[in-house]
Image 1 (cartoon, rainbow over the protein chains, first blue to last red):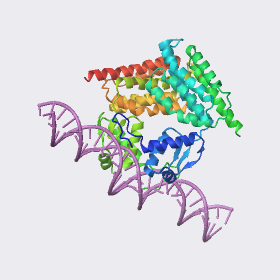
Image 2: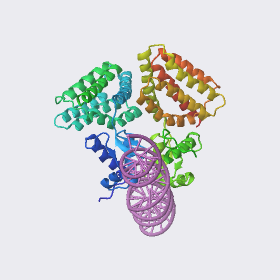
Image 3: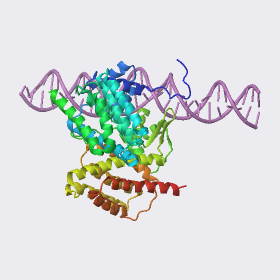
Length: 222
Length: 222
DNA sequence: CATGGGTACATTGTTACACAATTTGCGCGA
DNA sequence: TCGCGCAAATTGTGTAACAATGTACCCATG
């Protein structure tokens, strides 16, 4: 292969590659909640050693896509409604703090430098709604919230929030809600308009709406 | 030794033991910021394999006590003032959300069931201030904030907040501030009294005070 | 004497294979 | 039919080796 330029980051490490592939399988629904993940089997499938696979699984455990039982191994996570509410409470804390910081700095009319990246991500969501599969749509949806939380530039709030993305996508995978194409984007444009003058309660209301969709979807599945 | 009862958790795993020991060394100042941590050396010192040591180092990296440079190894973390401010912003988001939740449920007079664990941890801080070393004091101090954030029972907010404890203690290790014994406890009793009627701004003020102490301590050290 | 290039060294990243440890389930005997 | 013991399945950890990467040092040339 081509020699790597010195400025490039070192090539992606094997555990990261394995984690990426497993993450796609889990979030894409190929591997369902509760499925055991056997180290030797994964080592064979990915043509890597068990040590490398264990490192990859540890990364997914940190993202809460998998859960470990000692001497029993890893399995794909499933969250209870109570756990979902805890997760949404955390996301609400982070996103409402981002909104508070933006109010503190910019009042009720946020400048274009703040709005443009968020609006760009909403445009991306709209594009995803026309033609993308459900995972593509939920990823684009997550990107909107990520952009909003990133807007004040508080690096650690952003980082923790981004760390919740896999888990959030895993949750939404099970939600078979049919939105007309473009309606999620419209909803988030409205949300962006409202939170410039509103506050944390709008954030929590927005997230509670999502929790309710998940709850309803689970009830329908019974 | 006595056979382990089935209800007991399995014995502590080797990587956790190594991580615990290294954490104590780092937080106790035995291993200073910037010190490289060589895998083979640690493997010899702890009488474990490099695999086990690498797993332990990964745990400490997740707590941000150490930082990895690819192919260069781990070293004990050092945070810039900007990074400290980001960390405090995150802690502020979590603690002020806990306070908001407590107001939402209990108004301006929190019941004893809420206050008792927090007051107990402040008593523990007071005990630590009489006779404990600086790490003992900073641990007891962290326990007060942990108890407060845990009070509304939002598990994930608590968990993220607790995950910041090692890093916070590492920061405070470098702060050679001389508090009269008991004054930290008194300050936190006052803080607990105030936040029952006050809100997030008091939380941020309290944390900003700590950031200022760290900043001043670093200036003094130059 | 200074600079650049190449090589070697230090250390991490990963592998293969093996054995220890733990949990659970199944089979056999009472 | 129930309880106990053992085996199987799987993870947790170890050993030893080699691959990969980055940095520093040495040598040669200008």
